[in-house]
Image 1 (tube, one colour):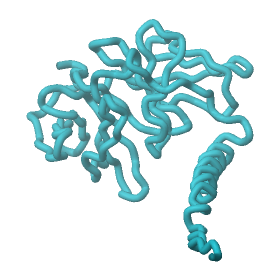
Image 2 (cartoon, rainbow, N blue to C red):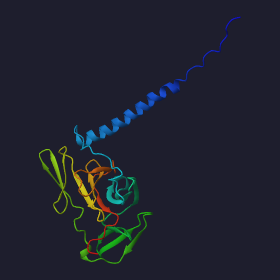
Image 3 (cartoon, rainbow, N blue to C red):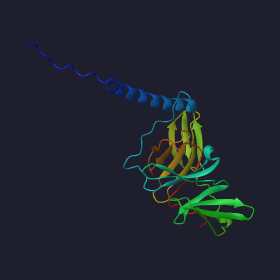
Image 4 (tube, helix red, strand yellow):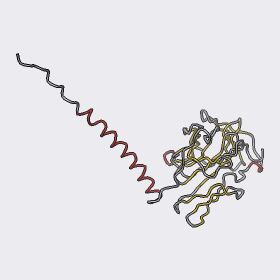
Length: 230
């Protein structure tokens, strides 16, 4: 009697192609990121830094106020300790960050009737006007940063002239804003690659907290920062 065996099931070409498609997707993503860095910095990328870990991850949130082209105005974002970024509110033109206390994220608004202080709830974006403030509450330069070059080395200083960081970097790389957490002394830095970096007190180099906030110019303030002059 002839040996009759069932014919083998045809292989699934879709299953065979899945690993190839996955590799192509990863390669495409890497290519897009690389192209973005090349367009922004040329062939020399921004300084390579480690990501935050359990010892360097902040325990407080950070507010960013920046212009967003899609919103055609200034928007307030909040970075949570886990590194997630959430848009809180847009339409905040004519304001500047002043602090962040139990009243909310505090914005100064300058107008014909004087200086006003607005509190923005970081949870839902609602705002409320606070009583008039005096001239002593004007921003005190805490977000000011100086990036100078010594050959191939970038030297970053804070408003007091203290050197925060020295790093070899391309000519067009810079740090555009800093803010110091009053509780821990940790410094947040926004760089030209759109990264939010954190530099714990006493550390020689920062770590990457947020890889891309889609902006390289913003004002920064930590949760728990009092308004200057209060």
